[in-house]
Length: 334
Image 1 (cartoon, rainbow, N blue to C red):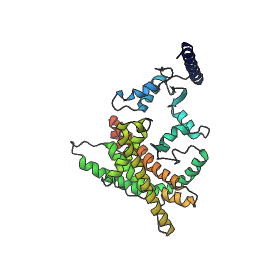
Image 2 (image 1 turned 30 degrees about the horizontal axis):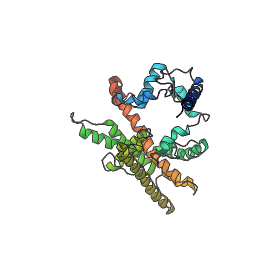
Image 3 (image 1 turned 90 degrees about the vertical axis):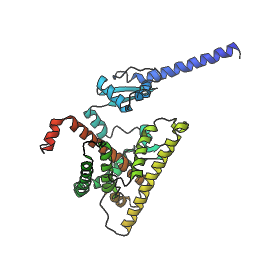
Image 4 (image 1 turned 135 degrees about the horizontal axis):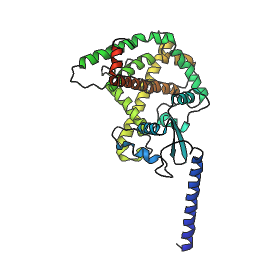
């Protein structure tokens, strides 16, 4: 290759690199006034921080965000290549963003939970639907199942599962047997949600559905694992990816079978619970896409129980850290 051609190619590469750097700089410049951690790399931005998050055992990406919020304040800028994200942690700002229709969900971000490793997970369900009109239509149907009368009718289910949990904990309370409250509360909330929302008896607390419990856990792990876009090409990850895909298909099939049973019961005029599933089926009038119906089944089954279980687990943890509040709680003063 002639020196002239090499010089031309080198110049073209330098020009392209310069244009790329200029584009990245201009894309970031409008957000530079927002505080944020220093960028380890100009082009990669803060991406190297995310790669290092696992150096400390048990840390996840949100731990990194929490550290930044503590250090730089309630509004933090994050750069990855030419894109800028803003982390907002103040309650007032979070409420404004969640309650206002002016701020739409980022379809690219929510695609990560709509589909996981090529399998439809949350799809266009209530959590992952990015179109406000379609989301609002679904929400109106769901609200019927969360009316005061509906919630009061579920108290028996709540009390039944709570008493079951207490009995199991009492049997283990010998002062020597370690108990994972996170696992116990996860099983409890899953039992409650399955029965309250879909009329299903899962028996998680009693260990009757260990395969289902394991598959739900795999799906939650899969949401995190899918952030690695190269996982499907890495031989060491193939088994995990295959199990995650099988778990998603299994859960959607469980939902499909249960929906079909309830639909047939409604057609026969049988008495059915006035739960979320019944409200959806009554409101569909033949227009509801079965795939979207299954999306909401998976959404409530996974996202619903997971958030409730985490809140309860954090409550137990904080009570254990505040003995004076725990004492008042035991005396019924809270």
